[in-house]
Amino acid sequence: AQKVTQAQTEISVVEKEDVTLDCVYETRDTTYYLFWYKQPPSGELVFLIRRNSFDEQNEISGRYSWNFQKSTSSFNFTITASQVVDSAVYFCALSPIDSNYQLIWGAGTKLIIKP
Amino acid sequence: GAGVSQSPRYKVTKRGQDVALRCDPISGHVSLYWYRQALGQGPEFLTYFNYEAQQDKSGLPNDRFSAERPEGSISTLTIQRTEQRDSAMYRCASSLVGMRGFTDTQYFGPGTRLTVL
Image (cartoon, rainbow over the protein chains, first blue to last red):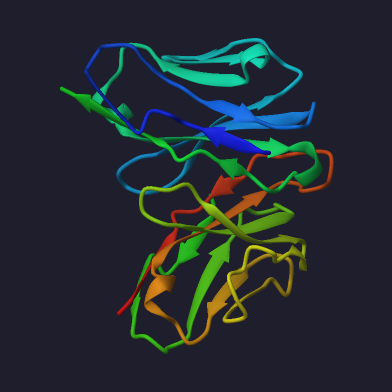
């Protein structure tokens, strides 16, 4: 089965706290891609990161970091020193290599950053 | 450069009417995708084009839904005889390439919010 699970439906933190959004995936493929997208209250879907299954290096981009662990089939997303503008729904998605255009989406995690 | 654009941004129609939703992909992007997103859920795949060829339409819910991309650029998603259950956000995305064995990043447009009364 090909599946993405984002178990946290909603997370609420106070500004400046660190927060981690979990993403666990299932796939039978050895090669695949993982993505994170952000959907702010304005509604657009904004691409954040794409990761190839062969690249297990963690990635940091400013306050954002991603922890890819193949052993646990997880691709977690951490926001450091959260800001109100980080409030959004965050989606994790999987693209199996034999269906490159079909993104399998998690249900999303709604992140609320309180001032 | 310009991102993916969609029009209209909002569409309210009466049950039974036809609607046409337009997508203008990022210039030079070969692949174009249509999704539907219900509130509180992730996007649901509808159909996919490489250039003007519709490669996969397996996600279209029924034969009231159709899509075209006649010149390999702008695409139109048409819903005939709309029903209330068609109400959703319709999103378009494009990517530079879309070939088996390689997954390129899909960049999404702002979406069209369709409401069928």
